[in-house]
Amino acid sequence: MTDSCIDLKADLALIRDAVLAAGDLALSEREAGLKIWSKSGGSPVTSADHAVDSYLRDVLMAARPDYGWLSEETPDSTDRLSARRLFVVDPIDGTVAYMKGKPWWCIPVAVVEDGLPVAAVIHAPALNETFSATRGGGATLNGRTITASDTTDLDDASVLADARLLEGPHWPEPWPAMRFEKRNAIAYRMALVAAGAFDAAIALTPKWDWDVCAGALIAEEAGARVSDHHGGAWRFNQLDPRQNSLICSAPALHPLIVRRTAPIPLAPR
Image (cartoon, rainbow, N blue to C red; front, side, top):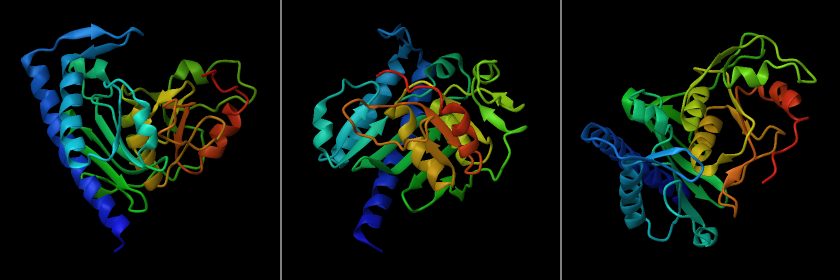
């Protein structure tokens, strides 16, 4: 076993233990009563988001002081750009679901090395589901290997997306009839595609790295394909920590989706 494989296993164990404890913290914070306010863009944030962020930062950076840090709830710093490895964290993805007592929220954490995720965990505490992966090591759900759907046809595919977006008349190539559902957390949507519970997740607006980084590795290691809506590959730890858009799907569906979405210009950044 190479040193890099040992490092990835150690990093995976570190972030998994931290994320499981952070899930317990999030549940106890909600039980004790949340303070809620709005960010500058209008999205809600809670005292639990900040408590989980602080906990993860303290634990992970104490264990890996030479790693960089990127989190939704920590002011960004360009210092991370010079780090070969960094943690990418969303303390609570799906805050609205979390606030309302719905189960569709999660805590995603990834380790990025040279622009690519190499270890990742997505933990959904209310569902007792923990997805994890290392680069080249496959993906698991609660310790069991997961594989993306083998669906080959978009007709009747199960898709996590806004039906109003895809069912409109403005598409040069119409979409076939598909089954649409919603889940609050972007990372959890990607994990569900990785597990084969859904055939695709589609979002045509820019997504923050902390929302999609862990999901990208878990989905790819499960055999799914992940890209922007032009089919472009993602790179992480860039100056602008966002990806243009999200196509995460069963491998056979990816070209069918990108063929339809590619005419849409990339959003201005």
